[in-house]
Image (cartoon, rainbow over the protein chains, first blue to last red):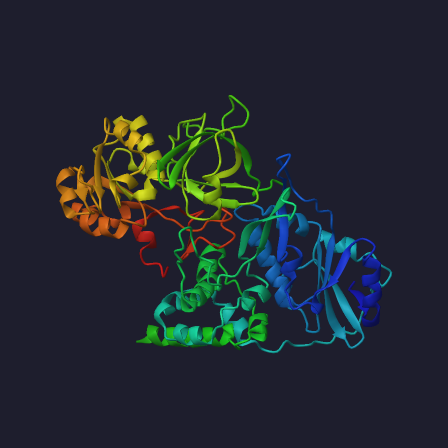
Length: 306
Length: 277
């Protein structure tokens, strides 16, 4: 029997959940859900310079994220895999393990791509509660979520998304991007791109980081921090002595695409993109992945025919 | 859950100045009599060519190739060149001080594949540490290898590191030294020159090469290894990148579709020579 929640009761359900979880509505942040498990900056170790004692900061939190769209749920499934292999990332998983992800969509769900619970709109007043995991099962124990024998279920279709369609053939994308190394589009993009790194921060899948130590002002203790980095930033590939493997914007921008569509495909069999549009919506220069890929794939297909 | 980023405390039991800005740090467990790392079933503490992340809290950590014998369980040597904030600080340390180490990471040279063959090793300046570990391995198993050569180049005779070890190795392998700027006592070669080939006698169809770059890499390839007839597939290159996590996640060491920290740092030359970076 379908589980249903009234639209107006959702906020009351979230209030109930606050007893067991730190609840965050992800729709309120421009940063993607990864920030709750892989924060922009976190202390990984504390070290007391006097006693020479090393410690790992405690973490006891239990997070429930509400309002993830379907692309972000899919991204979380992929990010879990990235942080799982080849070895479990300690800092990501100690936050992620006990967390619960609640998706929210006004379109009819065809295949759920991740999360523990999805609220799916079935009519103007009600959402169906799809429970996908054991963790999800525990979180829906509420009088506000009811079993209804025959709720009114309307179909809401998703708008077509050409990027999403392209992603279905990630092998073609991998071939096309690898082939495009000398394509003129990278010169054109290098002129547009400001090299600010925003695209990678708002991307739900980008996970570059750097590790830096910070010494407290008293000089008696310090911490090792892991913070978001971006492969599009100038010093990302710099080694001791100053040499940079990606000295120009063009090389860095291409490397970003190369990771998402070529290296990721070889590593995980998938592009590291879920067509969420965050990069395009937040790029100060107005660059969109979809347009770039369409041009490259188009030219690659022409090349294959000649 | 294991914290894969947690380093181990080590004690510096020896510091030896190798040149004006390079020192060798000998690291051991802070507990006397204990080994820094466990040896595997073949008695190896690491594979020659693997790297470790070595550092100090407050100053960070950086990747270094292990330079001691992989069979040595009492200590591990790292060669550190002053090149930045951390290495500057490391050079101020004294014997008895403590630091932090994690690893070893990466694959290392394919010693099983190399065994039974003639070996030509090429490196320059500060690229000697991983090659040194490989030489120690070869000498320990000398009977398993054919003719073995080390071609080692540097800018000046003073920049040739680990000369004490080189003198010792010369009993078991042939060492060819070359510098760009010789002094008046210099008797070796000048530059990575093709004449070096005349001193190398190998069975090219069954020989392998090991390099640690980037310094002399392309020149050695063009003037020595290819003329000798060693195929690119059999040239193993130890690659340098900025490994930060060591675990294939942070993306700093990516080259093409590979991660230097996980898939490398040793690659067949033909695996990486066509990478866009």
